[in-house]
Image (cartoon, rainbow, N blue to C red):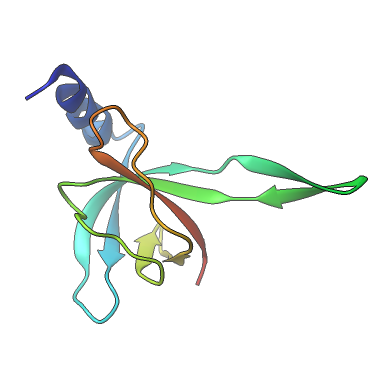
Length: 104
């Protein structure tokens, strides 16, 4: 295992950073996962106007969810979300998916 992989295991195992959730692929059974929730605000420019948009992102390990797709669902803190857009892998080892979600 690489140093990055070991660091990811520590991050996803830390209860102060990651939480339990469910990943529900379309038409399949729910899978228990560890999620890191991020809620960055986004400012979108539109001409002379700037619009404030709340966003929710979840990071999940590729080992737990190998092929996430738009339309799949995530349950976190008793709330349900729908994956919107294509999931991305931005970490150096490509071992974590970033899921852009919206409330279901």
